[in-house]
Length: 313
Image 1: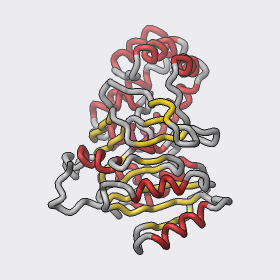
Image 2: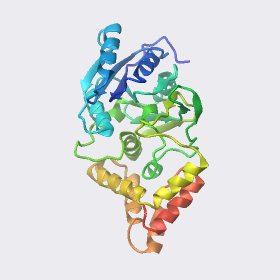
Image 3: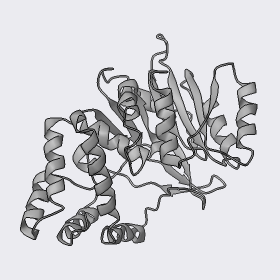
Image 4: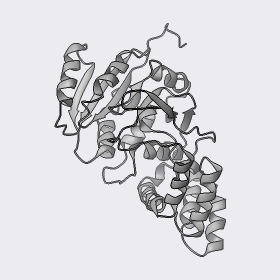
């Protein structure tokens, strides 16, 4: 357990909502149950037309003044909503945690993250993420998310996101870097971009194999999780449909706007990876090998090599 002799640093929970009335109360109650008590909640609501706003106002009245702040989202999709609320909250706390509207946090979710984060110097960007428990709409456990065993790195982040935003907690320096992403920079997702830019600038990333979030799987999920072998083969097949190629192009363009943040080593990794996407076959494969980019499983890496051969990265 963390010591209780010193005051707990403040964590700003950044929750994005859109028509979340069905599950929102359970998530808000799980915040109250946290063993880490020094937190505030900033909710960016993106034009909800159901009872979401009324639920938030009800909890705002119940909680202490200043505990819950509600702002209006930009109405440009969930990615920009998270980026927007991160820019809004930058500098308001020592640490930050992204949250979805339909999950349920374990009581020690914030405390687990802080055990690692508090050991990282404040000047070093630091990002915590982890595995999740998968639950049904009725909150019955139905499985676990994929367990990633290889170390997080920029070379992995370029082609794979291992951390869901609903598990991510990060320090003020990491928040500053994400918040300073230019508004005209397109990214695939807020969490993947956080993994890319924080690892790219020499920050530290930790993947916790012990889950602390109950990740609800339902038809309205914007991003779901499927860990079956069939799903894994489908992901490899997606490589050949150009999905990774399109994502890689978005990331390369985004990083070109923020290349000054990257370490010299990671600039080199990016250049080699970009070179592996063009030219004749032997050179593409050579540059891919030299870049050291990798995915987390052997099957995924076989798929990556095949995708490189067929110009699908």
